[in-house]
Length: 92
Image (cartoon, rainbow, N blue to C red; front, top):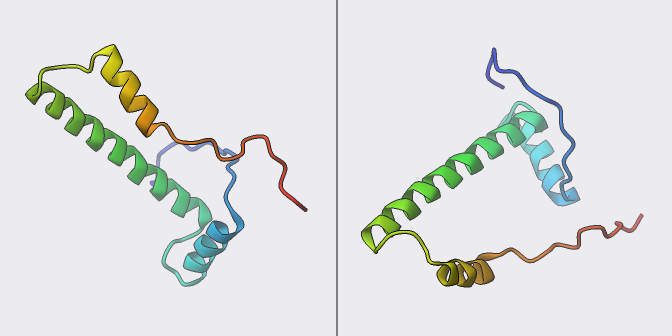
């Protein structure tokens, strides 16, 4: 965590295997703790989103401008993630 930055506690859900891997990294000293690992992962993901957004804007500028409604609908249908069982209860 960066000193001086405000932080807010949130609840997230991780798979058992992912959490075990993160805890193992913390035990090995490769990350300070689970929270630090998640904070870093979020920073990386946000940088990726910004980078892809900039790259898309540049590509659109070079190829004729913004997507049409039909192009956007097609892209959404191809790229939309599939639901991962929201609302299902995990077996105890």
